[in-house]
Image 1 (cartoon, rainbow, N blue to C red):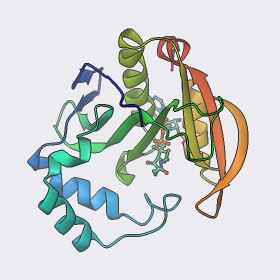
Image 2: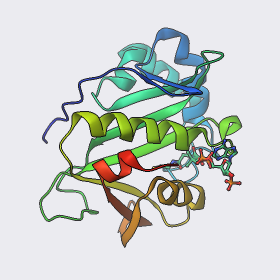
Image 3: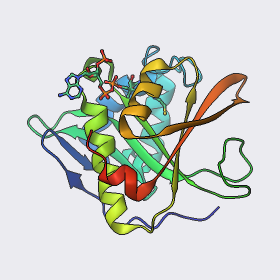
Length: 188
Ligand SMILES: CC(C)(COP(=O)(O)OP(=O)(O)OC[C@H]1O[C@@H](n2cnc3c(N)ncnc32)[C@H](O)[C@@H]1OP(=O)(O)O)[C@@H](O)C(=O)NCCC(=O)NCCS
């Protein structure tokens, strides 16, 4: 799979800092990632103990080792709010706009107490805006379950447009797409 060359490791906006994961993020990261409500459309619950043991073995920095992976941190408190990823969608998986392409794919996850405040929108806009200054114009995808209304609403707010639905992981998936430079210039 082609790797993504994203030449920045931090970005900030009014309320949000995007950065790489650090040891102080561990408790909040495990709590978020094992939260059944957060994982409702992402394959269901996982054991917090097993997840913590796995991350402690690999090191917390492993969760953001991909160039497009970031934690979302609240500027005012330094608290972890969520995670955000821009990565290449492997060609062998379903859900593409261009045949045999490995388009960029955006995904996002917020702790439950951070929902409903526009924080995911702010963080995703920041990442798209920053990436648009560094990368050539290209297609960006969002893939999310058709049942995940909050996620589809966020994708639409960011400027993604519906392309199609398809089935993966025994669930119906919504495929949305946009062009990076247009998404990066959108007012959210
Ligand atoms: C998907 C997810 C990140 C969306 O979070 P969210 O908080 O709804 O998204 P936004 O940041 O865009 O916030 C929008 C909401 O904040 C409200 N809001 C409050 N203050 C706001 C502000 N200053 N600016 C913008 N919106 C604001 C909006 O009215 C909207 O509310 P509504 O949902 O009642 O309509 C969240 O539901 C989540 O983490 N889900 C679990 C993980 C998941 O399924 N991820 C998808 C995989 S790709």
